[in-house]
Length: 618
Image (cartoon, rainbow, N blue to C red; front, side, top):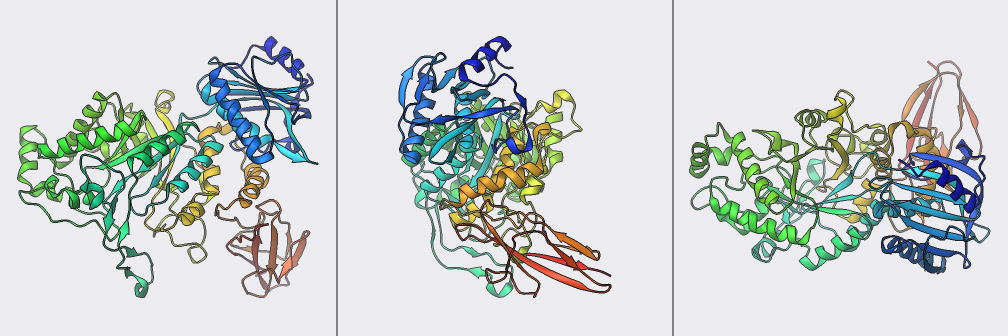
């Protein structure tokens, strides 16, 4: 939907936008990530300076106007005068106008020499602001915005990442920095994985031992693939987030249109909780248990036969729901071994009493009972795709992680699905050759190009079934991420690729424009911050073998302003080698081969992993 044509023409005239709008050309693209649904460029710019008046239509629009003013003050030392009204007849105006007519999260942005107007609901105004900020450029000391007409809306309602803090925990300041980046790229979900076998990370007032005992492990597995370097570090490790810290994070995210969804793992991945309260495990005198030290899956899980287990979990979830106002509460549900249940008299009594066939149906009973409780609090559960086993809870949303097929099955059963398949969007997987990348999990390869090429809606679904694919999420599991800098390296720039597949409709995607034009500009901006990111290799080269007698090497830096160094002597490339300045030829006679090694060095001094290209003339 969009504004009526006649009103739009009148508004464009008031804004000073020429009516002879033309299709967006390659050189005139806005550089915005994710790409908007509709863009028409025009001639000229709007200049933001001390004379610009900042208008807002109501209190909803005022919040966004204030956010813009805060940004201008912080980054440009500029504070604009705020006024309530439409500002349509005023020159040199920047106006925010609230409307629900465009649809959820949608917005329009009209900019021209006379002014800028952004319209939308509360979320739409915020996203219009993010587009505006990405359009801003400073030229000759002037802050200006290109003239354009943009009509934009998201493809999916659920656009997120999952941050695990069970294996390793990170400071609140880092969590907030992630939320800032989500907001910038129009992502709206921060899925916070707060409990794990290896650590319980959320304060629960009624059960203080969850954090005094469950939040700490005695030692941590050293994550190496070389046998001589494996083992334990023999150092205590742990920590948790207080309820005050959680409230702070939730409020911080809400101000940026990001919903924080908590995950409390059940019935499996519960060893840290059982270390604190062993009576929740199977048997008459279970335990003692220790918070897990080695990576993996553990057989000790919550007992499905004891009533006290459900009382405990309901108490925990009540406090969780008091902290998190999100529609969804994630209950895990993945990787739950059944061996303890098979041997537990209480679990077997439950199976008989409820007329269940086996332990898989017992897990379904467990999940459905938790769902009834959560639904009774006005919320909905979401869980990993194993919650389908034994029968899916009636109102549950499925997060498909094991395969795309699991998401297809759930959608065919008329359940909403968030696609998070490890085959395409697991951000703990490698981004390049293992010997040139930081340690990562032992399988999987998901570079940014693979993320960008992924379509979360499977083509084989019917039109009605496709409506159940409500979004996409990238999980970040952190067994091998013991610092927040490692998380950043694994997250950026894949987050930008994820944002585009989550927001932008497939017909508007353009991989060449994304990787060769827009992403280099965004990485150059990131390069000016203290955020660690993976510097891509040179555009135009990759790790491969090419055959022929003559090759023309034409390269572009993957980060605007970066330099490319290369050599042919077999050593890793460095700044003492050739600096790429213009295209050149590699010429081989019959039977010759030549190896080219290259590296990208950004303006801040960050370096890419080396690229090795072998040329052969057989």
